[in-house]
Length: 373
Ligand code: OSB
Ligand code: MG
Image 1: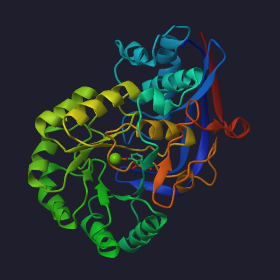
Image 2: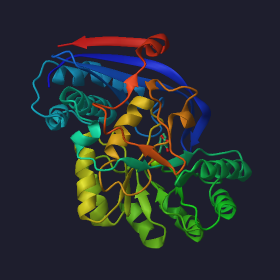
Image 3: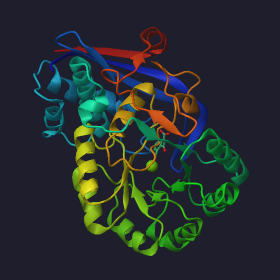
C-alpha cells in the first residue's frame, strides 16, 4: 500500500435529536472524512471522530485537521507500507497525542488495504462474527418520564442494551425509573462521562440496586487509581472508556482492578492496531470488551462494525443503525438493524462494505483540503 493523496472534508450533519452527555450537548455533528487514494488508483474513505468541543477528549475537529495536514499525512504519503500494521508506529514516533487524528489515517490504511485486496475489512482484521449485537446510547433527558419513554421505544425496536447517560442530579431517580418501567430482564447500563468524584462513592453505590450490566467511566477522564478504589465499593462492574487511551492503560486497568470491562473506541486509542492489541490482552485476561461509538456517520460506523466482529467483542456495541442518528446517512446502503437487535457485518463486500454517496457529500462539504505525496 502506498497512499498518494489524502482529501480531507468537513460536512455538517444534523442529528435527529440533540445528544446530551454530562459534559456537553451536540445537535449537529461536524462530520470529518478522509478520502485516501492509493498509488494504484484504489480509493477508500475513513472518518475522524474528533468532537466539536474538547469535552470528551482534548481533541476537536480543528486540532485533528491541523494534526493531519501538518504532521500526520506527510508521514504516510508516498511511503510504501508492507502492512497497515506498520502505519501506527510511523504515526506515533515522537508525536504525542492526537489519537483521533492518527486513527483516521491508520484505520483508513486498513480500509484501503482491504479494498485493494478485494476482502472485507472484517476479514482483514480477523473478525469472526456475521452480526453484531446492538445497543443504544440515550442522552440525558429533561426528566425521568422522557427517559422512560425513550427507553421503552428502544426496547420495542429490539436494542439489546440500553445505555443511559447520567450526571449528578440526573442519576439514581432516572435509572430507577427505567429499571422499574422495563422490568428485571432488560439489559441496562449507565455512562457518566467522568461526572463524579470518589467522594461520591456512597451515592454511586445506590446504583447497585438496579442490577446494571455496568457503569461506564464514573470518575476522572485519565484516572485509574480512584476507579480501582471505587470498584472495590461497587458490586456493579465498572467499564472504562475515556481512561483507556493505549494498550498500557488497558494493562494498568487489569493490574489495578480499575474496572472489569473496556469500551474500545478505535479513534480514542489511535486506531485498529492498538484496538486489536487491547482486544487480545483482554481476551487472555477474560475481560469482555465492546465497541463504543462517537455519533459517527455511516463511514465511521463501517469501521466500528468491522472491529466489533472480533471474537472478544462479547457485549452489545453502541452501533445503532443510521436512522437512529440521521434523517439520511451519507452511505449506501444505510446501516440497519434486524428486529432482534443485530447489525449485519458486510463480510461479502470488499473494503468498508458501504459506498459513500459522493454527489451528496459534495453538496454538503463546507471545507476541503487535498494533500499529495
Ligand atoms: O461516552 O460513549 C460515550 C458520544 C459522544 C461522546 C462520548 C460518548 C458517546 C456515546 C454515543 O455514548 C454512542 C453512539 O455513537 O451511539
Ligand atoms: Mg462513554
